[in-house]
Length: 290
Ligand SMILES: O=c1ccn([C@@H]2O[C@H](COP(=O)(O)O)[C@@H](O)[C@H]2O)c(=O)[nH]1
Image 1 (tube, rainbow, N blue to C red):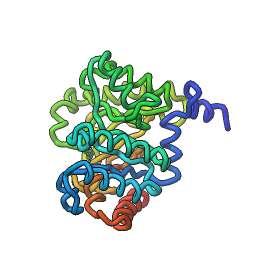
Image 2: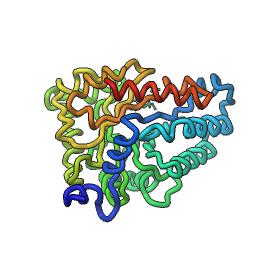
Image 3: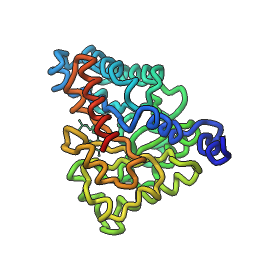
Image 4: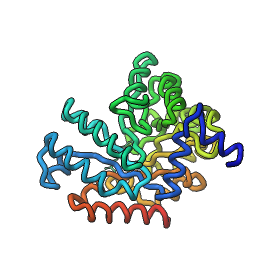
């Protein structure tokens, strides 16, 4: 392996998340399937809105898409609403995904003062934690630097983070667009780019969440994703109205960094495994061909 590639794959002796995600995207394509067990979906699948329904739903989705997607993204809130038994199901989902060798993104959107952030980092990013995922989503609105414990632990354990920059919901603009050409979103992207200097290869392990729905905002707000050098988690496909064509138009030259993510559109094809797989494959084909 050339020297620089070796350096990118190894940070403190562990293969970095960016390197593992790059390999998964090369092998499978740029699709992440969201596991969002909404009460309405449980009902549409003929399941009860309880822990047994949650478990059956989650394991069916994982079984259907694990060999097809680069990553899966369980939505933590939808496990939390079932209390400790729901979180036990999430632990099981994360462990099974590890066994199936599909990368996990825990969509937890954590963010707090540094001392509390260290506990969140322990929960999601430390080896041996029951909730350890390959990566976790983080909210930088207590200040990017407040995320330091998670940024450092992720580097130490070969895991990754996705920091909210330009979210897919229309309300996000009231905070993230502030500052215009020197916007909040731009500063978050710059800070992520600074972190990615510790990952010398192609793709860093500090990613951003940028909605597939954001349209021209990236250019208007001066966000330079190529310079950021991290992966881009792009929710908003399907149920929120964005298509693979929107994704290509929005991200342009940075499209190679983009992991498109879709939940409800794919999940509503269930409960048959083959129907779920076909729906995921259609999205993946769109992401590959656009
Ligand atoms: O900006 C954001 C950040 C996160 N999400 C999450 O992604 C999924 C989207 O679900 P769909 O059913 O495909 O709309 C969901 O878990 C959100 O919490 C987002 O949509 N936008």
